[in-house]
Image (tube, rainbow, N blue to C red):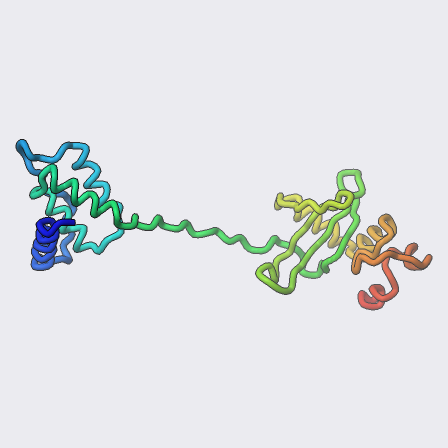
Length: 208
């Protein structure tokens, strides 16, 4: 930026500060006319930069007032200055954080089997106690080795309701059908545990 342009900007800043800066000029001053007048393209680009670049409001006021003094050559130099400034940051949309899914608090984390829509279906309830997901409840449908997250609220609530009717029964049914304890996921190796569907340690913990 040459000394003449610097002086022009400094003068405009002083004039803006001498005026009451609390009053924001909402409109640009009319551009210069005549042979040396800036082009319409230059004027539009200048206005866009003034409105969208990150700067102090008194400087924005100053640039709006300056338009009437800028020739085609001067406005080109000012545009180069404005281009170097950062853009006004875009407002960040607030992330809508949904609450943990509704679930009976009596349902423990574990794997369950329930009869639903005429079919035997297997589900996993996860309730993290640490990290950013602590306090949340997650429901997944088990299909082979895959756990597919149940995202539909109505479906989640229907499954929770089925498990809640007989939580121990659903836990036992999982173990009986899969051969692993739904509470700790360990393989059920003795005949009593396989028949009951829950291992001896977990039976003691669950009081069954």
